[in-house]
Length: 139
Image (cartoon, rainbow, N blue to C red; front, top):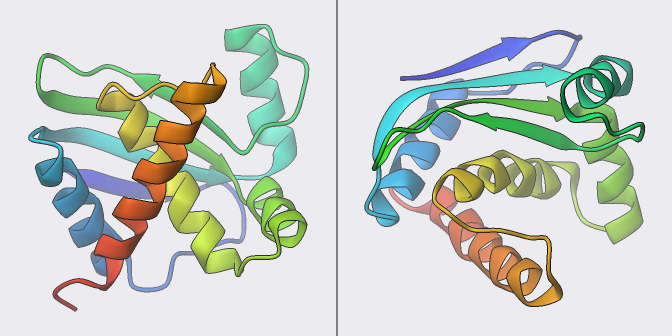
């Protein structure tokens, strides 16, 4: 089950489209959908989590807590809408495209993809692009 939660004024338009897309992405990686919660928030909210749980004193666009068991994906994915908007501006891409990239980034981590090294980050970026294209399938 995929749930969307909001700790700010942001609201996804047509949550069911996102839910269907995320489910297809999970299936495309031969994984099973468990309990997945997205929490959309602001920089301050996510910064507190970053400091408290990860001991990182900086801003980030996403923090994911992975509770997966085997092939069944479970977790909490926190996304700062402020960071997504700033990144969209910096990368000169539409907000919706950057939001999709970040939404699926957490799922890809749960599927085993990493992004700490340059080579891993390149693979992660390619996977993000591949999965964003699935958003338009079967709509």
